[in-house]
Length: 167
Picture 1 (tube, helix red, strand yellow):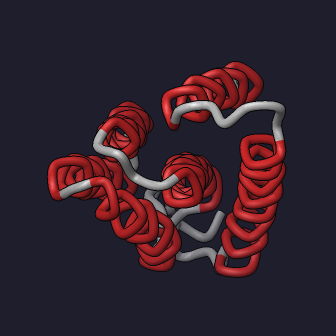
Picture 2 (spheres, rainbow, N blue to C red; picture 1 turned 180 degrees about the vertical axis):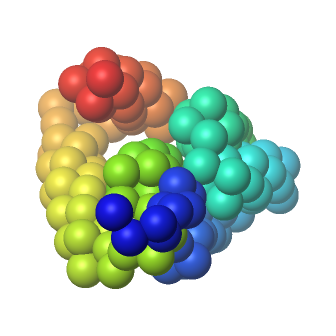
Picture 3 (cartoon, rainbow, N blue to C red; picture 1 turned 180 degrees about the horizontal axis):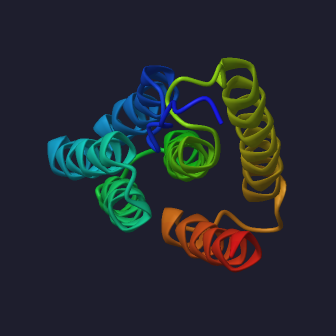
């Protein structure tokens, strides 16, 4: 044994990955009003504090608060593309934060996890954006124009599915 102790926390890069996704969610929420954007930003702050302290519970709570901010934006008449992007970005922020905490606990803050974190976040963002794109296409070319609330309900269902599959 070398006698070196591993710091069981995520590295600094983890905050950047989750922060960029969270900032994207907050920016998308702004189109529905300041309240949704403020709640989303609060959720991102809680999420980032969870990443910094390596606490999955805070990451989960922050992700949920950020998502609720997007919901408020949707109810505040945000356009469907903004709701879809905000939802995808809040899920990516939450997923990247949880992944960072897990990597930090397994490998420590000293390990070089930049590539793994970036690939994980990019893959999550691609899945989210492709899903959002198809959701928007269905919304736009469907037989009747449904209210934004319909898109929101579909997003809640997709998010719950994602949470269920992730656990």
